[in-house]
Image 1: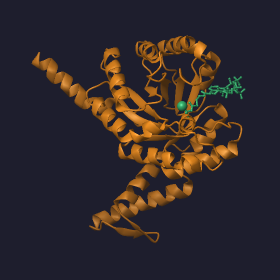
Image 2: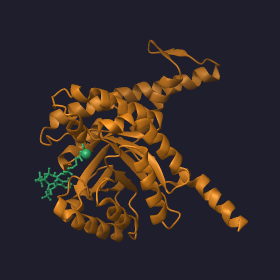
Image 3: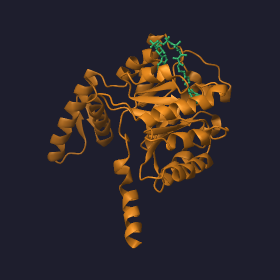
Length: 319
Ligand SMILES: CC(C)(COP(=O)(O)OP(=O)(O)OC[C@H]1O[C@@H](n2cnc3c(N)ncnc32)[C@H](O)[C@@H]1OP(=O)(O)O)[C@@H](O)C(=O)NCCC(=O)NCCSC(=O)C[C@H](O)C(=O)O
Ligand SMILES: [Mg+2]
């Protein structure tokens, strides 16, 4: 009995080290309607970091059951292996709908679990508590699943810090790991009654707040969707704006958007050279016992160092 308790505690303690795909990049997070088998098959052929099989807004109300069952049949077959590592997720319906429990039950009882569950329209920490206890009941093995939370309303933004604190705390004794926040800009605009403009100024505050809180909790920050999917120049521009704000990836709705997004969220050659040089210089100065130093005319200390480390980490994904 004591042995079992100690073992359980040890497993929970070690859990974070074994969470699947915790550190995988999620530059492009591509939605694939769960009821569309043709699109699902197509998504498995694409060079995309993250596939989100969708039960939510990409699926018509009268196709919810079909989407859930189709997704389940693909999960039962096992995650198709590709040359590159990728994340296979399922976006369930929001917790204030009649669908979410069946969505979650269906995908968490599949022969092979998805890597990640994506939870839309999280407005407060009670939703996370409800989700956490459901996940605990459904996962019968020692497996752990990643969770990505969508913030897409005024209330959700007011409660954002509490949502992240409660999720972090619950994940310590549950079977999930919170890995990211998504800015659901379209639902957010509808919720606050904003009128969309080319510059996206009307959502600037929310877009920045999401990154800020994500970084405070060491989470990936996934930017707004660009719905004019044929306008690739506009997409590139919006990706670059998001990356400069600190976003680590972006939602994508069409295969044509994937290469642009995946490329945009990689550092440029110039940034890589800057970061590599800075790290070399940093290590030399550390040996000499100097904390702050000057590199290419700029004062460098620990925060700039960490930015350089992030760039070098991402650069490893460059072909
Ligand atoms: C927008 C679409 C309906 C367009 O689809 P379609 O008309 O089929 O486009 P194409 O003919 O140009 O497609 C070319 C080929 O690519 C395949 N395809 C298209 N889209 C996808 C996809 N998402 N995943 C996989 N494969 C895809 C087509 O089947 C064609 O294949 P082939 O014939 O073999 O060449 C469609 O793109 C679509 O449904 N997109 C997803 C829409 C969606 O999920 N919307 C909800 C997510 S956005 C969101 O939730 C925002 C957030 O929550 C917020 O609030 O902001
Ligand atoms: Mg949404």
